[in-house]
Length: 160
Image (cartoon, rainbow, N blue to C red):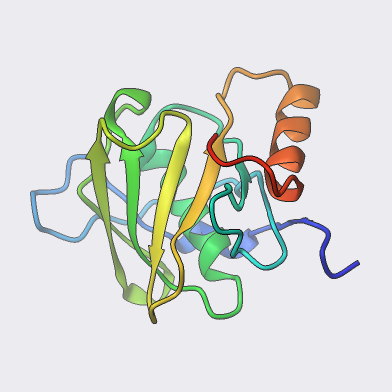
């Protein structure tokens, strides 16, 4: 059972912080009452050449959705998110940085060179990067959960 993906509830995500209108270089403001991230991870979060799980955000607002994802990842043993890379055309309201639980600042970079429908995560401590499939918010629930489960369990998926 150790190799099965886990759905991670994140009630502590309510203290993650964000503000898409924060001044450049300034830590963001606090939002409370965040919904838990809908995310499934590979148990090891280390599948080289494959995505490590799936995430199904509720909207396309990066400033609203990323704090719960950061909290979900930071809740994993040995993971402390330092940087996120997202495709700039997939998101609205992308902040430059977020302040996570515990006060650490997470940089958010937007690119056109990262694969669409993915988020790439750099964690502290030299940990291998984490790649997650991002399921479109408007995907029907059954299809979204199936896609996330496949992303977290199929070792043969080299890209999202």
